[in-house]
Length: 287
Image (cartoon, rainbow, N blue to C red; front, side, top):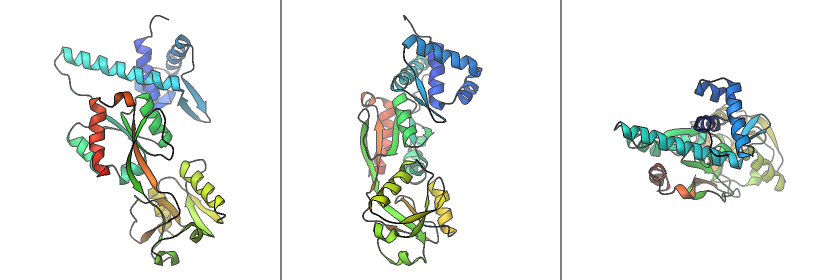
């Protein structure tokens, strides 16, 4: 192998951003079979798989993440070179990846500041997708709740919040200033669908504490979960950064660990303008 096709690399960068052949092919204005062929040829040239399937989801392999990051960096350099030729060079807009809860309840001031200065491109996804976006170069910086720090990324604490029980203001437990896991015995809880990190944590923790409970409703996203609490469908354990809507109250569960948000980025990109701009804006969140 003497060279890799720059066209195939550019196509792989788009595929890595979507991890969906249909959407990536539409973005590239080519057919799905053509995109499959480009990526299969890249994998054959490199002699290693670039992605794999987990259930219905496609994920990049570590080599795929490295290649996607290289492809994005190459594309950025090419764009900067061509812009410089005609005098239209502009700094690249930094990309931030985070989940729904962080965007809704934590990062608003930082995003407004970025839009007023450098601009910002936003990537939305769960923790797994946030980390994958940073590793593949789809995002310059990610924000995620981490209980285990990734060994290949630079992680910095951003904000910490207690875990709280959300309930109607007239619920008997609302009269207490704080709660323990024992207070949840016999409750019907509104929880995320199975296999998500929050659901898995709750099930593991309540089982270890021998606290009996039942699933009232399975729902995705804090807004819908809190809406269902307000409708009387059950109670919910939520992140303490989420404000209580009118008619609900939140009480800290003191024997649950705090939720710790971190920023993550590649250590070898710490001095890049896109990374430093994002970290500077996010520093206000820590303050």
